[in-house]
Length: 132
Image 1 (cartoon, rainbow, N blue to C red):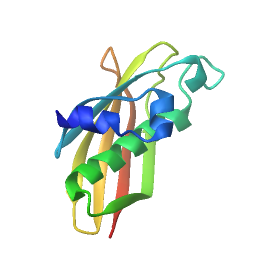
Image 2: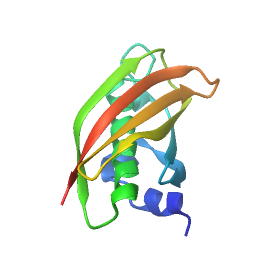
Image 3: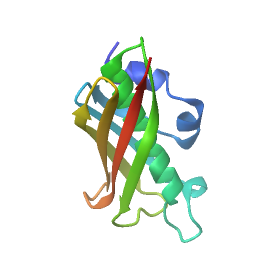
């Protein structure tokens, strides 16, 4: 079974509820998509920042798990989000997660979230603590 399929089959319940789909996965890169639905909105017809941050946080944690294996777990220590542009309801967004640092006790990941037209929506940097 391809790694992205195995990861998709084991998404956390909240990620499944929000409609995340992992389309590519390796130790060096995770790619996920979601369609911005009405329930992801902020009242202005665009994606709520919290839903966007949840996408990045979840995929960064998954990227860490791919790198540390089943013998350990992870939790987010810090996350910083730069909101660059809006994603309207009905838009498909893509999150691409790549490593900045992969250590034994912490890992740092960067997530670029873009719209289908290629425009950057947000840039997220997060630090994951490796547990166990």
